[in-house]
Length: 180
Image (cartoon, rainbow, N blue to C red; front, side):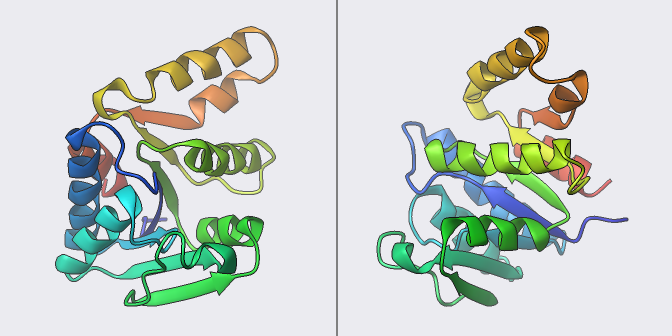
């Protein structure tokens, strides 16, 4: 089944390197240029805002989901193609994942890790078979890869868990795989 909609997990902050913001903007633009809908956390701050504004600038379809308690904090981006306000964070994650065919993880913090591990756990439990791409800009996620490999080596997960994460180092790489 071809990918038509991509869930992007990323920081509500810009992070410490301009390369993170540049990757977010390139991803948003790339999704739009390839006719892929962006599904994301509906914020207009940090990398979230950058990926959405880039997709919009390229006339892309944008689908944002934000819990009520974050509308002010993350500056809910109401000018999206679709804007959904949920009651809880868990509901937000469920709506985002269920409305996408693939996941891409940009640099981010605890929230991005929470989203990634929930998607990975649900895949491990056969609740979905969507590809999960970890966009390892400037080796940001390399310590996470080491940790996942350690979890598998210590017997707390099978090789299928590590294999469920597709590690890519550039937006061009992830776009090539999303559109293959």
